Image (cartoon, rainbow, N blue to C red):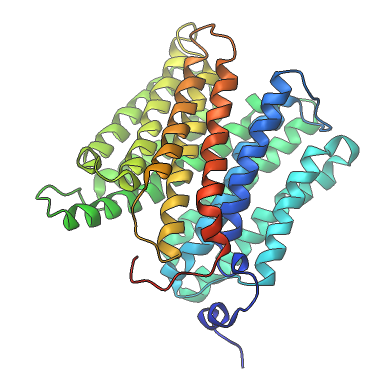
Length: 401
């Protein structure tokens, strides 16, 4: 008789790390984020050269957008699937094999100068392709059709990664190509879609506990749906016409729209609980990045495109993923949903890293970019130090959610 997924989890007697999707992927994702930044700082200091076919900047961009984000998406999706369908795609050694597949992609790209380009691409892309197949299986089995949108975004993200590989193989500067814009656009749309569900919901739950009379609007109202659709169209325009004035204007407009959306979620009332407040701070980088990228198109002498995109890459994606990783780890390991002072410290580090990286394009202070990288490492290695033990141990028996 075939065991259900829930029974497989209960009967699993192997390492706790392989008992749930978020455990290996959040842990190795954070380790990779810190390791890749150390490599980047060493490159900036001329202390090492990469054995990669990618130029250093293109490797750096790929390591964080496609390398880091893909594994965090996997951890989130494999943890969210039980809530969507009552099923779980993978547990135990199959989960371990999926983790090894992701690691193989990182190693292949790092040492790609010694490998065939098609082999590197296959090693890297196979992770999200297999992940997508697993998620599709569960959505179809659970008839959870509304979450096909998230799966479609994962498919676009994978297509963007393929395009990035092709641009690099053809000798282009992939870090400023269409692939990175398409991947970043898919990631931001996912943040807008998933964030639009969880941020007002988590905020409402906490404010109700505080007996607040002011509550956020419910998730995904008509305003939200129209804004997400318009945002997806605008980001598509940015992918195709990254320098057109119409693109810049549309990006500034969606920036204003997402700022209004954020205000409707009553984040100003969550300052007493950093675990909730950080979600609002992370989402704030979505409109800030949109306005900055739009301004960089319209007034290139005023704002650097690279600095503007870092508000999205490090700010929206880096901060949002760290916020979700801390909350999910606490909740799914049976610990109270509360950010202690050390968790607050890693939140401050990731926000500080983003601010310094943006500032580095406006001032000529030496080592400012490296200082940003150090704060980034503190944030993610700090997560490993604080939450790694929770990810490596079995769930604590507790009533805490």
